[in-house]
Length: 227
Image (cartoon, rainbow, N blue to C red; front, side, top):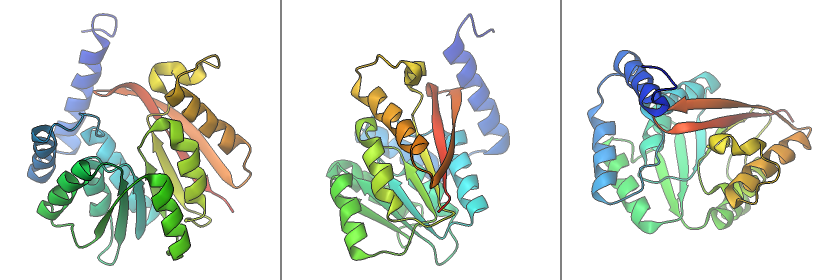
């Protein structure tokens, strides 16, 4: 099989190969996916190898406090929460109450309900609430929500981080449309504005990596807060 014949099929086959050898079977994660499907949630969660990447990044960072923007059914939250130490916490923000209900059940089933808080509401409002509460800074922030608001989410989250904190922002390449400066698509404009924000803020050091796989052609931005 070649990329020219069927790129998506090949990319998915590679994801499956990696997952079989480096991740293995996981009844908890499988149950989370099945619960999301039964509830009719969109199939847009990260792939297993991407979830493992988040887990590894959180452990490499030594993260004790993690913020996630965009919970969906809690699949990525499970990966992130598993990386936490015994006294660690994950705060995850979800707009849709129905999605949050599925996520809470999945997290409870995973035995992680005691270290994960699911906050329901518009992330713009919830981020402001967290700032007003004066919460302890987060070590890692995973942003996987509506792309038009990505620049705001990152900018607002900076007030909730510290020097050395890390951001992972998902789905920023948009099938290559990131490079289309004439695009009028709100999601594309959002990720372009994210890059403009990073480029203009001396506190931030970042790169964007293109990816292919079972979720198609996309990529993520990795940001470190320098000061």
